[in-house]
Amino acid sequence: MNQAVVTAADGAAVEALAAQVRGGVIRPADAGYDDARAVWNWSIDRRPAVIVRCTGPADVITALAFARTHVLQVAVRGAGHNVTGSAVCDAGLVVDLSAMKGIHVDPAKRTVRVEPGLTWAEVTQELEAFGLAAAGGYVSTTGVGGLTLGGGLGWLVRKHGLSCDNLVSADVVTADGRYLRASATEHPDLFWALRGGGGNFGVVTSFEFRVHPLSTVLAGLVIHPVSRAHEVLRLFRELTSEAPDELTCGAILFHAPPAPFIPAEAHGAPVIAVGGVYAGPPEDGEKAVAALRAFGPPVADIFQPMPFSAAQTMADPLWPRGHQYWKSSFLTGLPDDAIDVVVEHFASVPSPMTPVLVDHNGGGAIARVPAEETAFGHRNWTFNLLLSSIWSDAADSASNVAWTRRFMTAMQPYAADAQYVNYVGAESDERPADLFGSSYDRLVAVKDRYDPGNVFNLYHNIPPSTGVQ
Image 1 (cartoon, one colour):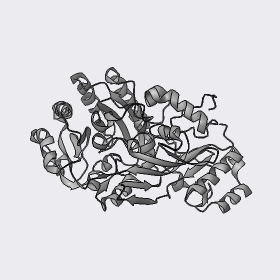
Image 2 (tube, one colour):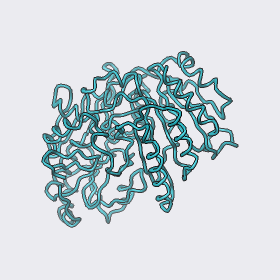
Image 3 (cartoon, one colour):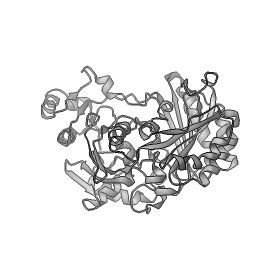
Image 4 (cartoon, helix red, strand yellow):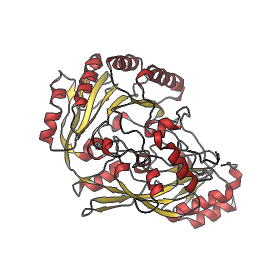
């Protein structure tokens, strides 16, 4: 799709657009423009020509019609938790869904319908009043839309599957302005593609999920000094080899924040922790993590029964706003040599804000969904590595990017030819087959049907077979 210059969408045309939408329009000269174009990743600095603050599907339809008329690049923004920067564009139009926060719980059917401006924290809080929980993410500030469209790993993945596995239906505005319901019986090809194929096919204006009875969980983390990282990672490997489906956990290397549960002398120190959520009776969870808690002595052990809403916020402090550069890969295993590489490279991390995560999502519910049922293409890997470099000063960008690249290069002997699309940054060196697996050719066919002009081309793009870029 060709991109027009800013002047193609100024003056009277934008005034007319503003009169047609309920949510309002923001232009570069307007107050609040810089806030409206900012995303979670500070390294993204893009200046759209117009931002349409949508309040519902009608505004989305109007915004896309304006973009077609003026041949403008289109970006789609949900809750803004966006490492790639695809939520904003230069000199184009942003379909901003962040104000769309409607939510409706059906306790009898155990479903919830949510709009795309919601975060998982907001959904979890609403569901908690009904003793229910959704299969959301690991970090509560993550947006519902982006996580689900890319698959949706989270604290309930081994018990209840990915976010996209729990999707029942979605309302979608396509590139040509059609308003469709996608489900197992309505536009099933589009429904399949939305579950793991990302934001390549349309603007989703609502998601309907299955939800599950859940209130109190056993959750927390056990923290050790980084000097014991080799031992802790081997213990983590052993723990996950026998973990019940109810337990989802991960090992993380980070610098201890000044939190009340961490002794003052450890604040700022490099540490390693194993954290997890047991989505079942807490007394059964105690047995599942007994070996982990017996290993010590730890710097801190904060495993305890808590509301699921509290468990979902545990990791939030480790992924703040800032300059971000991410590399990730599923792993073929976690042998001792791979553990050596992880520990060695973390020792030279240039930013104390950077966490290194090895999460366990193999087996359990995610592996029981047939590979062809959704577009998510990576169900059989046990471990996933995330190098999420975060720093505050733009002057430090080069050193942090270089460290991340060196680390991932050193991990290549243990890396699968598979990446989780929600963990992948903005670089284009990842192959489509690595991101989407065996689903890629089928995704191209869906793209041909619903977006042959490649209007939605910013999110790890799947170009149509026509070759339109």
